[in-house]
Image (cartoon, rainbow, N blue to C red; front, side, top):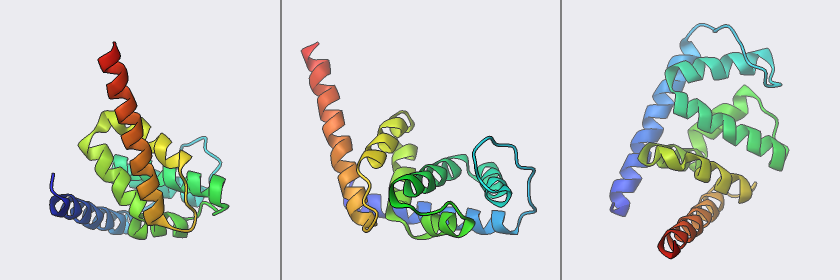
Length: 145
């Protein structure tokens, strides 16, 4: 895939995600049913988001949990919205999940292992490098038997 095609896909995915976010922001609150330690407002937000776009909710939840754990950023609706609207890793992980759903665990693990709290693009670059290294290792092991 050419770089421009990849960038266009990411742009289209971000545009779609923003449309979905706007839609669920206007939607009525859903009944929150989760065992995660979120406020009721955040639980409702994630549940509504999941109804609109399951993969979007999964990526945003992974990211805010990781940012809370590794960067001391609280899980708030404002932070979730910021991640989904502006964070380059969000778009990257959505794209990776759509292109290769089976690779999602590797994408998430690579992202979790290579957090950069101060620079989202560096976080993407480090995640890409880790994923490439893991795929090369898998290929090497498959060739060796």
